[in-house]
Length: 201
Image (cartoon, rainbow, N blue to C red):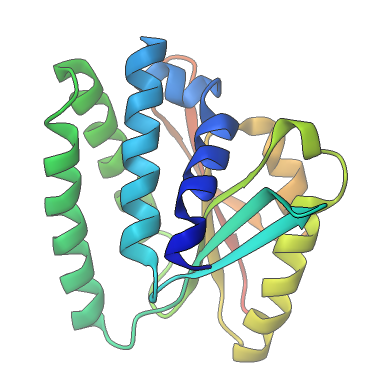
């Protein structure tokens, strides 16, 4: 992926996540939620260019799916530096949004990091995010994106991490050998699932 695909990628991610229960919880106001999603995904994709591995799926020349894979850092120090920069960037981004959005999203990030740190240690790959346009779902797009990269990851004999707040997606990930390791409440109706795919040794 190049910077030229950025707008299409951000639009796809925003469309895919706009009505998900998790983001509706984070930002109940639809207009604020859309603005937050655009800014959040724009920042994540931009920061990941040249670092993360971003796979795209096209149908008839139109972008319909995206999978963002975070490779293991070269060293623990590099991981720490990247997290510090990401934390600062996130704080800057959140300042544009209501106190409620800030508090809910930061509390979620804390839950995600704690769950990840207590279930897996570097080196590992991460899948975050993956999305398919609603109109292209059920056509094997997500499966193709996941299968392609997992073949490469298996060659490195490293585990893979992902997190989801959509219970219905768990069965999909389980087909690729991801296993639920933790279930952490985010709200009374939202659960954060930490999933790990063991290294293929």
